Amino acid sequence: MIVVSNSTPLIALSRINKLGLLREYFGEVYIQKEVYEEVVTRGGNLFGAEEVASAEWIKVENVKNRIAVESLSIALDKGEAEAIVLAREKDGMLVIDDGDGRRIAESLGLKITGTIGILLLASADGKLDFKKTIDELIAVGFRLSEKEYKRILIHFSL
Image (cartoon, rainbow, N blue to C red):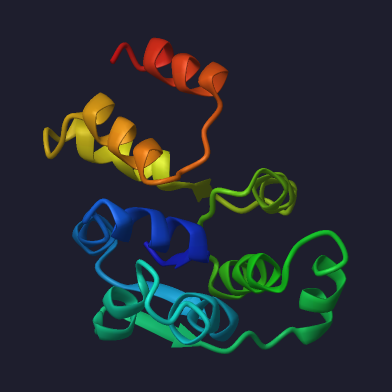
């Protein structure tokens, strides 16, 4: 399965030393130039910069449909817009956390998951303790409302 990622999941997973889960589950992950710029170039010494720059399994590609990017950029930031367009161009799944971006991607028929979805997958495979890992993720600044946190734990009986 072809997978395209936005910047937030790359940064979030890097912050808790779980970026490798993307490689384990998907082999290669595509990002577009804007996401690379956000994470590595402008990210500088922030979490994810070194990990993404050195990961040979993360492939940077340019988006072809610039008109679609400009249209989506009215409602989303450029990185999210490019991630959605690249996922459509590659007919792939999109890894994205932003609510507006997720809603637009779903409305365009894209398959999506996010940081929490990747952690749930790993938890189901016995690779990590989900509650402990999500608590660690929240502790390093991942935004998740208390209501959503409880809903996830109840829904997945964790």
